[in-house]
Amino acid sequence: MRSIENSKKPDNSIMIKYLLIILITTISPLIIAFIIYSNHPNSNLLKAIFEATSGFPALLSANNLLLSSVLNAWCKTAPFWGLVLFSLSFKHIQIKGGQSEGSMIKGLVLFSILYIPIVGMLLLSSAEITESGKIYRAMSKNDYLLTGLFMTIYIVCYTFTAFYLLMLAAVCQTINKKRKFFI
Image 1 (cartoon, rainbow, N blue to C red):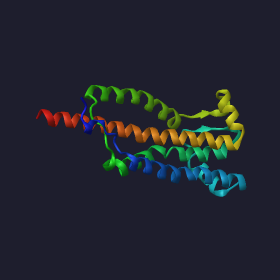
Image 2: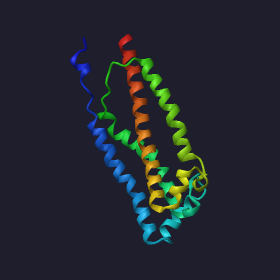
Image 3: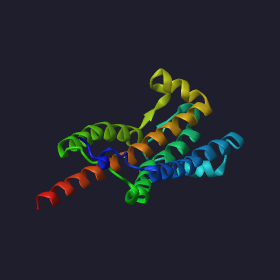
Image 4: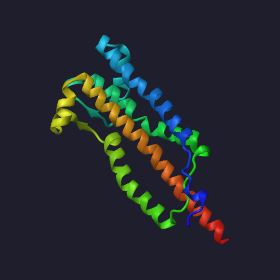
């Protein structure tokens, strides 16, 4: 029979609140850049960001080089904000016990296989999205859809980074508890 303590779900509502607050706050620059571009397509601010980030790998749209470059530059900050979220909420995270050390490590390895290539592809590679698949080509033709694409990339990188760090902390915590038990 399971004990009552093990059947309780962890209350990670503080982390979820931080996640949403930071997400809304940090996704705003994408929206602001879109609004600036919509009202002033030749904005000096956007051109300055474009010039400053021109040497970095980027997902760019030939249909809208300036907007896609600025949005892509901000998307590169998503892992940093995921780390900030994890740092702020680490002390409030509750991890449900009962998983074996092996299953925790297996989950971390499987998530690493998912996380590392996705974030690497989205943040560290260069691509011209107007020459990519049909969905990317369609999204690159419309400024609204292009902004939506970059918002989605930002959200994926941000949440995946936060949850990857959470899984890493859970594995470390599980290993430390097992070692303390045997010592």
